[in-house]
Image (tube, rainbow, N blue to C red; front, side):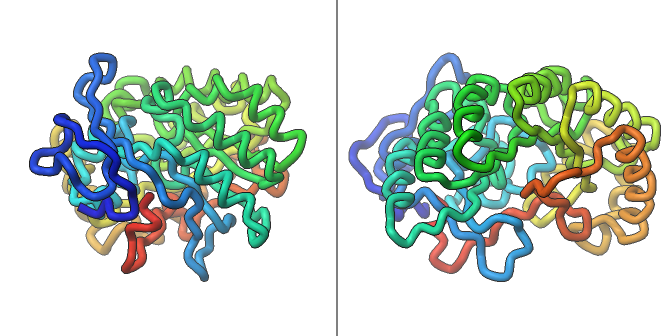
Length: 345
């Protein structure tokens, strides 16, 4: 297991089978309030991850306080990152969450370096910083404070309504640095949402969080990502979604279609077979050539969505750092270099 970028201080009986003392793991924790979950606490050597040169991402650095995510979205593009730790991209990704308990302390050291140029830092580009584990570990308040105090601009993308806890901190940070906030809300049908992303807050709860952020005077966009072919992509469904986004007061909305990269596609297709077997042949045809839906489908989707963005006044009106991804794909998880261990944590 690739925990070698960490520091081991103790062992724990709840560790993964056969891995009671892997290099890098401090301890593994299971608690009644998080039934079925295991938190693997590690001590990180680094907090800031550099975006590879040549990337089209509009930010140069990321922070990932957690690896794995209890939101359990069947389509999550970050699932394959668990394979770097020799965990699987399915249930392990949902239930085995790595927690970088010292991430804020390490971040402060890195931000204090004379070489730090205060480039934009993005949170939420891999796994969600406001997933359920954050309620236990409270890593984000210290991360926000460290970035603001060092005058480093940052963005936060989340599905977690726990963001509301930190709105006062984000308000204060925005007095000193540029702060971009966005909520990811892909599905607006409660039954479908509970099935395809069972660990997430409801669309209504997330929209209420958008409203709370806006009432605090901060900009807040909504990521309509991913739009699911034949499930959430009709004009009527898109109009309903964007009408609700507008009613919540969102600053703008961005969209993309489903992106099924290797490691994600099998997990999503198993869900589709269980829940919507009538769509299997259509999805097999649509994604026969790779991870992206065909260009024609994406063009037709854009023709439906863009007029609705204009109608509802949700076109991006300012230079936000969140950008629509190339080829309208879902945000791309950053590739791990050959010596992946130092960037994974």
